[in-house]
Length: 215
Image 1 (tube, rainbow, N blue to C red):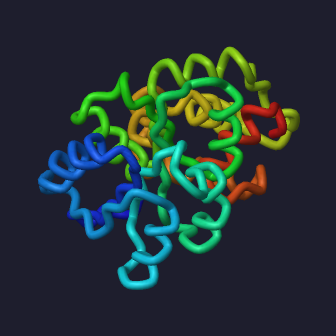
Image 2: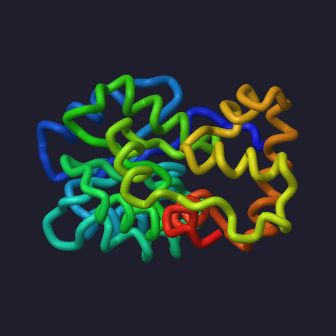
Image 3: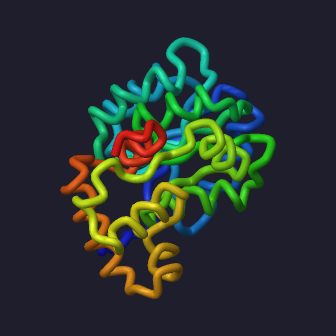
């Protein structure tokens, strides 16, 4: 498994000055993170990206003036394929969740239900291969989309099916390893096989297809 080299670069895109400052003051003083980009719009983010190295994680507000977070996701993922994007919003309606996952988000957190330490944990979760979903988001995603089992069961081994199920529940690779009593390296190998067999390139694409029952 790839070793994470801390501190990692985090970009914060939030138009509410109070929230932006709270996130900056907390996250940017954690030893695991540095925050070279803290801006109030997607347009400002694009300008900063022309001047700075790509961030490892972007914490992106959904409801922004100008281009919204969800609207910006496809272009951001195209330009920054190795960057994890965690959306933050006040809304946990299933349609927004689906749009975010389909567009490539690896996390979706609810502002008023997420403490600052939980923001930190969300970022660490995606770095470790998990999908950072607030509890209410995870529940609504499962209830609304009712992910179906793989439509190609003969393609996957029983263990691969177990790993796939755990991933669609939002578990990180380390959490999958603990659940299935496997080593993290073994789980990582299974994840790579799943990506190859199901022809997906990212965790976001895997979750999106699972949500649609299209695996």
